[in-house]
Image 1 (cartoon, rainbow, N blue to C red):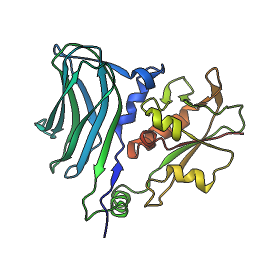
Image 2: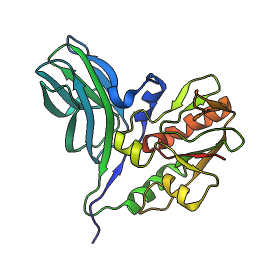
Image 3: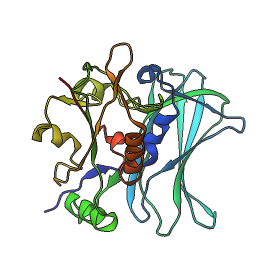
Length: 273
């Protein structure tokens, strides 16, 4: 019997990395202003006619704040369909609270999907750990999902391998990848603390072994793996845990993520000495 399973759906989520600060976001999150006509809108890489769960962590210093999450489907004719509305009372706690939209099936038809956050109380809020998970029905499995994806769009890169063995790059907890011009491409800033501690936002090795390649396989039940290999052109940051890549490789990385956002799955490997 085929079991019900979940796969993390990736897409535009990690594009936020290009705009957020490189400060310690693991602890504080990314700031957003809500209330008094201000809202937060985020495009999600969902497919029509599929089921998903959506969650994110949110906190605020405001008392008795209530936040509403709305999943909208926007048709090509700009018709907006409010797919699911979920209200969350943040209470008096200043700690992180997980907000979620439980299992929801998107409608058939062309268009795009947008997550909308609004709040009753105007002020400063913080978010992190936005997660989108595809839910498979009992009649589906990973093999079917990935087979259909490959048939529909062709082959795609499943992860990034940065060869820095010719540089004095050190291993670290939060390594970053920059373009040659200094643009932050990857830093794992949306990763939860458990992931950082247990798995790390990158995998390290001196050679590209089968064990390392398992990190960038699309799914443990479907052994498709296709690494995008680039060569670092310099070490970055004071601790020399980050790297610079050329503008040409930056273009290749961004183009590859249009098809499959491997950064959102932390499918990154550093080859070091």
